[in-house]
Amino acid sequence: MTPFANPRDWFRNELRNFFRDFTGTSPGRGGRWPSTRSGRDLGVFPAVNIYDNGEGFRIRAELPGVDSDDLEINAKPDQIELRGERTIAPPEEDANWHRREREGGSFRRVVNLPKEIDPDGVSANLKFGVLDIFAPRSNDERPRQIEIE
Amino acid sequence: MSDELEIRERDELQRGEGTRQGTYFRPSVDIFETDDALSVLADVPGTDPENFDVNLEDSKLTIQAPTRGLGENWKPVYEEYRNGHFFREFRLGKQIDRDGITASFNDGVLTIRLPKQEEAQPRTIEVEEG
Image 1 (tube, chains in turn purple, brown):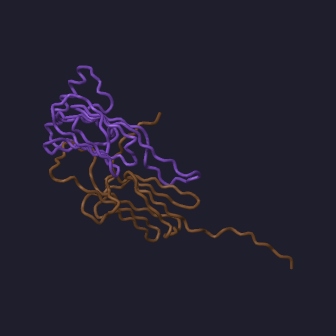
Image 2 (cartoon, one colour):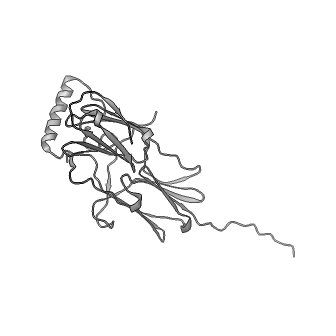
Image 3 (spheres, each protein chain N blue to C red):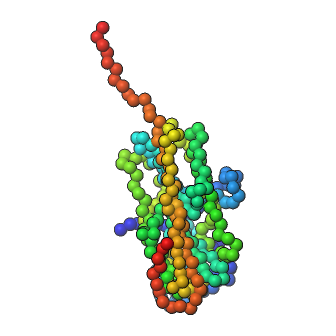
């Protein structure tokens, strides 16, 4: 099952990836749109969803336990980079673990966008553990670092 | 240098386990025990603490945390994770002091602390000489 809503986008993306590989540019881990998925490989953290309302894109990612101090967002006309650290506080001393399912660690992910956006108009909000980024469409070319509300 | 995080597949529940309409997922949890309490930490991003339902009945702890959708004018272009409510149940093996239960919610993580009932202290019995 493909994460793309429109199968034509999947095909266009495969074509884009093909030319990228062919020209030898390395997008880096998570640099493709989307991350490569094969069998068990679920891709780079965090998982993202992209929505479109015609005026811009909304990128959402689940980042429970991540504070805005631990997160950095950089926006360019065709991509948004998320990087940061998720810290899981160690429990009290002499604690016995019954379950341990949550993981901490660093993350870096580049999300390529389907259309050009205006980095100056990008806003981000981190609330209740969900990162919500709005990226309006535009032709602007300058990269810019985004403040998180 | 920290290890890099990876995505884990979401754990979807069978329908009917939650009380609201929609898809339910099991949140990832950490549970640990110290001398005086059990602690449960659950990743429930996107939930609103006003709508939580945390319940302890007998020794079954139930956590229900609903999420809200985005609104119809947002069309999904690309989805790596599915939106849904959170639900999970646990059997606690210890007696809990119900009045002492506390819960907090920070950055999408629900932390519940369940203090254990005081067990009878071991007591040395002096034997008087008769």
